[in-house]
Image (cartoon, rainbow, N blue to C red; front, side, top):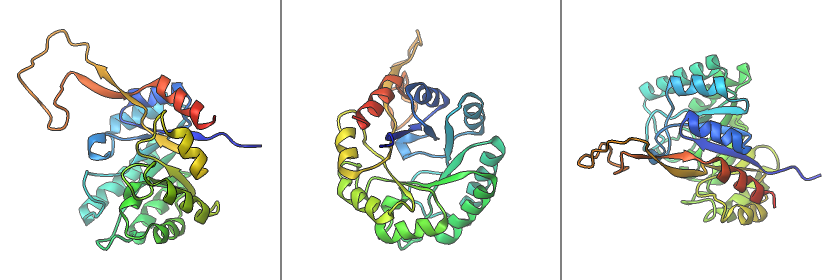
Length: 250
């Protein structure tokens, strides 16, 4: 019997997480600041998400945007966030730390895994994997660390561009770890990606632009550098989640 392809949604808020749940996702990766590639969400987001979700809740542990080479102080922050996720009852965390030469920082990653696992908290290795120097060595290192899953675009800007590498990673993993394609997955490409790679889990944000309900709008000001629009926000769309799951299993 073929198992269905499962969807994890990258949720940028509790609102997005609930839409993911309503659309049939099995898990959310809760984060903030998607325009920076995602950072750790606030304690409030984590707490309320845990209260309202019955699907698995994984939390991104990433103290800032930019690279994945962290100072000792930043690592302390990451460890503290992991401890809070454990206390909050999260199902998993999502981590990734590199050395300056692009190798996986096995020592510090393993410390985070060893914090989480005794409490039944799972660990996904995020797309820091894609910025590592040797993806196939990083695969072995990530398995050694004790992660259960790797989120990857195959070292390319999108999962479709990296589909050939993702397929090879899945074959090389031989069931020892889940290889979960992510980045740029949508209704238009998910079926082809799944059929080509053989992936059993996929990762997508399934977002749409939602317009503000504000009646008064000051059009003479821009508050953020990345958006340029203070009266709209990207949120996960339940219908897109449903459609991606359907097409992934077509």
